[in-house]
Image (cartoon, rainbow, N blue to C red):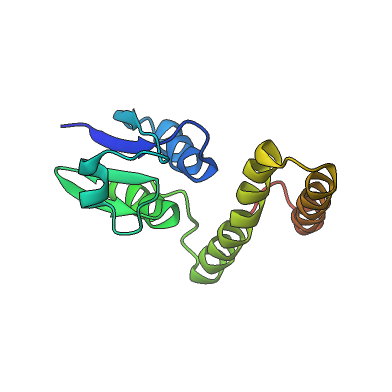
Length: 141
């Protein structure tokens, strides 16, 4: 039975999971829902009432970082380094990138120019921090 990913069409956090699944070559189905009018089955299985959800043999996993950790551990090889300190650094930057994901989504829904510009500035500042960290390296690992 393939994995089932539950999403809505524009969720940046679901994209993180889909990227991991595709990078690892894992078969999965995706079901899009309307979060403005979610189906009853979704409300019954989603404790936070948000996406993504990953359904594995009838068991629900929620929160994109947790889902990605499951995928990485359940489907080798791991995307994380063996070194525990480097693994912790990777996880720290994954958490940091939550803001980047959120800002990119917010840019698509801002109605006022000032709000858009403030969000864009925050996004670009976060990009600068990532770029500064990566200057001396080809990638996080």
